[in-house]
Length: 437
Image (tube, rainbow, N blue to C red; front, side, top):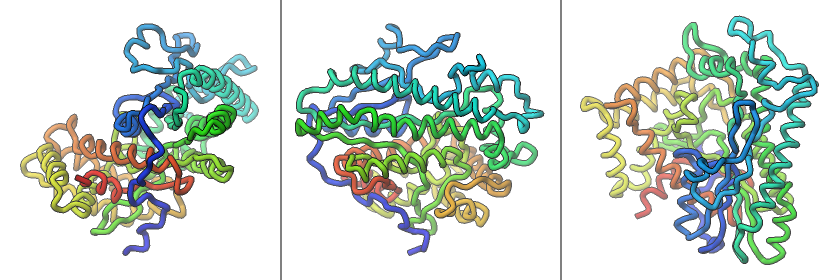
């Protein structure tokens, strides 16, 4: 057993629970987009006959006004849905100066971005206004939600809020250099993070990914007390990321993607859960394995640790029909001259490389990038993507589905009576769930 293995408090099996029953409610605090982690949670709830109440972050008009979904937009949504905008963040709040943070950033050029800085007082004002607006919206949201909760139903709130990239044109070109740049295009993440633009991003990630969980728990206190006094069960979950144990050299080892700039916000998200848990509230954050979706595609290379899930499947269910099917399905997506064994060898070489291992230290997480680490990671990512018949039809889609499914089951089951406020879901559990039949 490696010294790197099993150092994080992890769910090793999906807990058995009788808490959730038909008619109980899964409340999606945020909006469900495309295929992502939360879809697994929805499917786990639906398998139990639970009612899923969806939400929305709302939409922005051309003048910047935040509004609920209109009739046409609602017609495309699965009901029931609480149509109260839950957009978080502060970059579009009007300040006393007559500007928004975005307007302050609009003229920043790539040639002088390192000299930009939002005055501290204005950043604090924006943060406060954004938090107050969001808390007000949450109170309206909860008042609208309560009549939709069936009598005697247990309730689970799933926090879906994440991200928070400032919506200014200058930000994405810089973040692309941070996450995808090599050679002359490489930008050290610490340089960006310590800049004025990085400060805005850091505070925005905290506001969206972490502060919203605290606001939800705090603002729902009265509703939670009312439900619990009537004998009903109320719990909360959040989606974290803090590295994952995957199979490297035939054993489970913790590793992490770098640079994960949202990592500081995910730590704060964990702290919110810890504080609530200590106060007797059933709240937990679940650190899920890396996947590749539309929203995570900016982090090129984050998917490299996903491919070794195939090794975990062989380890946990060597004779399983599901293991054989997933291997066959993935092999069919590769060019004829490439075998899954080749892909797994490339992944292991990458994840075992000293420059990658150095940016994957549990006690130092989250870490910034280095030029050599990014070159190794991005080259491996591109090599594997290039080994596919089509870069539009990747193994990551097949494997991500297994992660969604297992995480949804594990989170819903454990959240009924969380073992601890922060738990890791690793490849061992994903594989065990996949090969269970």
